[in-house]
Length: 325
Image (cartoon, rainbow, N blue to C red):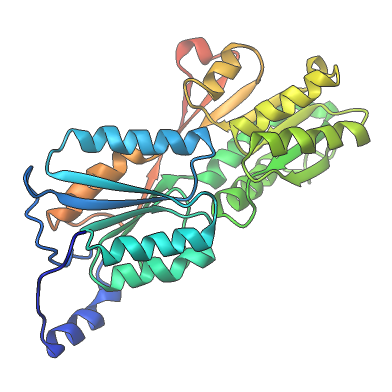
């Protein structure tokens, strides 16, 4: 394993501890790694799960970006969708003497403490995609989930027009910040106070998983003879809803909207006329490596880095989607 090899006086530790919360860019504690090809910096990557194609892509993006830098080595951990497991894995990475931690948390509250503990020990921490509570981390990188949800809501409201219609919302994990923000943004975009003809007739937490979405959509179909639009918090959810509707013989009368827009998933579903729209949610994997390099060189970075989004509809998909300002 990787061991730290340094001694600090009690007074030095006191000063570091006092300054830690005030630093916008933590300096890595010296682990003995030189940051060379022979002795690379070690980055610990704590992924909440690999059951979602989008998260597999995040790891792949991070891995490919790191491969361009021989002075970096990435150790990947998969928490298999369990917060307690992820917490333990973060502690293991810290004890192994990593130079920097990248974490995409399953949930905010359970991962706040281990992230803060790593940060206070002088390890730069990049929180990727899902936030933790407080500010005891170096930087957050992610898309604007509320904005993306809002754009999806605006698109649905425009689609339904003055006549309105019935909407099903299949939520991501609602104990996660992206799920909460994609829901809140969607309601803002729909503007139900203005668009009184739009009704949300069914809502369920499918926890980002396609099989769950398919099951929940089957329930929605059984209890609602008229559904005009399905808004799912990710593309696997939208695809699961489509499959359930197709099994019931009702896919032609329903429009499906998702989020993520991976080229081989959401964008392909739009091209194949399964979904009507999706919105880009960038993985941030490549950006995390760019930021990690700066931090390991003791450079300052922003506390929050927000990534952009695009819409992909049947009208613009052939043109490469449309940037949303």
